[in-house]
Length: 154
Image 1 (tube, helix red, strand yellow):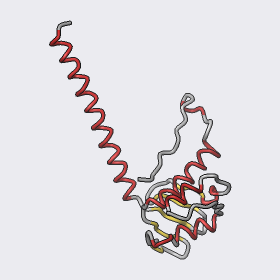
Image 2 (image 1 turned 30 degrees about the vertical axis):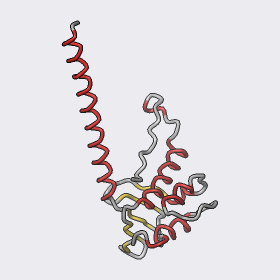
Image 3 (image 1 turned 30 degrees about the horizontal axis):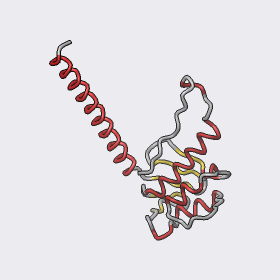
Image 4 (image 1 turned 90 degrees about the horizontal axis):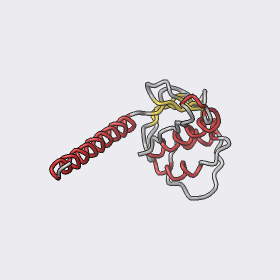
């Protein structure tokens, strides 16, 4: 192989890597925009936090027991200490965020629309991870590869 062919191969490789990186960046940006626009629906009566207009929900009771409370603490910028939330405390946090970070919209006596926010995404992430750990981990449907939930925090 002569020097010209080697240069062309290297240039082709560089262009291929650049295209892959651009596609990855574009899809990540698209995912982020999608997450930014997806509101949550909190059903206090059923104890569910759902993504609006999707069939994806998590039970708030998954918070008990959890060792991931610090993710929520960081998301809401709460004082760093030990927290042990139950379902009622988590509902209270979602409906009355500290420093009025966002304003839930009351849709009925028991249903609220909660805006996408770093703090609300942190609650979703913890519930998704608890769901995964308790009910989905170890499922060998994918040939030994575990599909951990994608964090919604941005």
